Image (tube, rainbow, N blue to C red; front, side, top):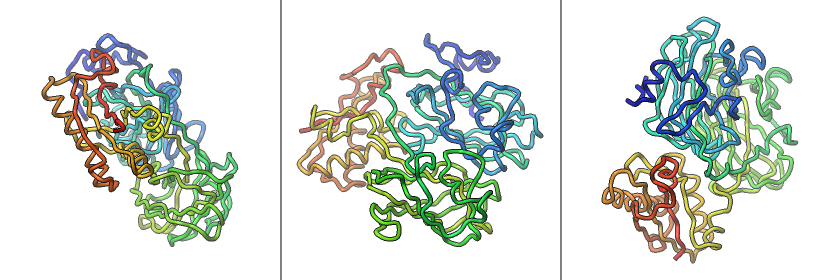
Amino acid sequence: MKKPVSSCWSVLYAVGLLLASMTTVWGQEIKNLAAMVEGGHLVFFSSQYNSTEWKAEHLIDGSSDKGWAGQNKGAQSVIIGFKNDGLAEVHDVLINPYTKENSSTWAKDIEIQVSTTYPFRDFRPVGKFTLKNEGNDQVFSFPQPTQARYVKIRFLSNYGGAYMEAGEVTVMGRLLPQAPPAPGYSNVAAASKGAKIEKYTSQYDESTWAVTHLLLEDGDKQWAGKSAGSQEVIIALPELAEITDVSINNYSKEDPKTWAKDVEVEVSSTFSYKGFSAVGKLSMPQIGDLHTISLQRPIPAKYVKIFFRANHGGSYMEAARVRVFKTEAVGGKPLAQQLVETGRAVVHEIHFGFNSAEILRGSETVLNQIAKALQENPKLELIIEGHTDNVGGAQFNLELSRKRADAVKRWLVDKAGISEVRLTTVGYGLIRPIADNSTEEGRAKNRRVELVRK
């Protein structure tokens, strides 16, 4: 398990004072943002044993005498959002693996990921740790305070029992009051919104393993085909929609070998039997999660075809959910519109490694938006500006900002095919702050890329 950073805060953890709902760090109030009483909520969970005694919400509802159980011991995930899906600065995650059942069922190996945009894409890993087989709060301290709108907890293994179980999850941090609101999204493949199964190759039965379970928002049921052979499911959306993402939760309460692995997705805007075009493929690991295909651009769709090509070696093809999203641009107005109206766009969603110019996973969404703006406006030329906070000194930050601006240019040239002559880079380091560098919130705002229309 990662050791907490050496500070007064970590000492407080060590002596157990974090049982209180809030405290202060560096003079600023932090609290358990995951707690339901603070507006925390589960955006997604792979499975729950039932919706009463072992429901997933027990992880964050403060009920210390109740716990969560998955339907088997397979690896699975929960995704936690904060009040109003707000952006937060996260310091630590605490997990108490205790449940009233045998300790062999308690969660063991954990992976933590964060997203600043959507709960179904743009996640980047923060780290892994191993829970001791003890019923107490165990702490993963982030290497540095990290911005997140959603925190994903992947429960990768337990201590050998038949179910994956845990007690309480705590996410210590603070909401950023001046942060932009969460980008909008909608699952247009939900049965509750009028989506239907148009066609399917097989279902094991019409009750426990019905294909219609794929369109439920959440619950305890999954779909199974009658064999492990390749098969298709065609979803009719309630109306023609500009879709941007397709997510699949491949979890099943049966042997993880039956879980769907290789998937291909096609869409049609006209007919349920022809006119389909391919939009992407997935190869899903044996982890119940929202495995997502993000389209390069919004595509009009009335029908979405899911080809389940292969599983992990079991006797049946099985999965839990299919979700089809339409989304709004990060930051509200599309980048192209911002550049046309103001000649400038400020971008905070490109994430770099600590003190480096390595572009991290989770940055592709906004990079693709920049590429799209350039592709759709062939006369558009941009200056890419790199900006930093004041940590590390002027010369260091000047060089770092230049390297980061160059890294963005190289991504657009190498990944999106944008001509180099349309892109100019410059680094300003710390000399052009837009917020107070004396606070972490201000420093986070100052770490940015700005795009300027030539």
